[in-house]
Image: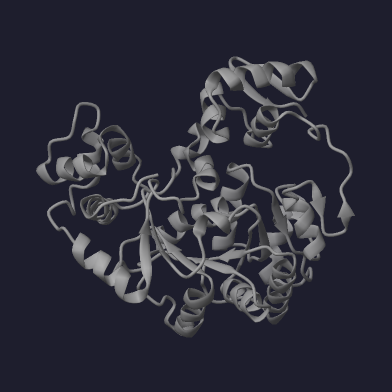
Length: 377
């Protein structure tokens, strides 16, 4: 990828501010004409045929260009704007958000504001999201901190949302163990939200990563937390709900993990605890796997076929050629995909996907129904 010039960077910053995420129509416009021309089209209200939706999505903000201010703010606090044109962009992790089955509910981000010394693309392959209630019990906070420290000991990053309760305990446990933690915010990268976590967020920015798709200065809002949750799930190899009440934002993150085909775990608590009702329901419904320790979480992620307890049993996918293995990995656990969707998710040409699916069908690993493919159960 070539180095982005100032005009391109300003165009991306302008578009990131004038479109409220998720902004699929603006992303489509950028894909069609490039960031600079897309920004001009939005400013001039003259989008190419087929992209009028981008004008509607930016109607409320297009006249206010804060790109210079936003980029200056990012520079001042040691943050940066990361786009799909940058090497740091975690394209593989985020690609699941653009599948037909999930794009309608959210889709991928247009760009990401990132603050911290680590590289975003290198943190998500084996990362684990630890999420849960803001009104956590002392048990929940203790377990979150212990799990975070254990994951760090295995060389994994811990992703969470920077909130009070389980999120904060997960971040603190990671930092105390000397590991990497990533806080995904529902507000601008320059805001300390919640304010009681200002010191914690500054420590994360100094040693880990803070991520947001919202332009500097953007305030937190309820709908932005729900939008943010899809990124927490997408940037992690697995999601674990440590503690959740009957009504909890963690349930939304868990639902996103399931939609994205990412492993979901939940930690059991006391049957008398209101703060564990949601986690227990996920386990009882079969939505989540019961996990009680860091080894159980590691077996959910198992990025290389091994977990912390030793060599994993042989799997049907062991020894597959690279294209076939990537196709299998691209297919979600409980959904079907078209060949084009598999091609996009796996990053393999359509013809190569067809050949891989034919071979996988012969050995009994996939099924086809009406042009859609799924893993054979």
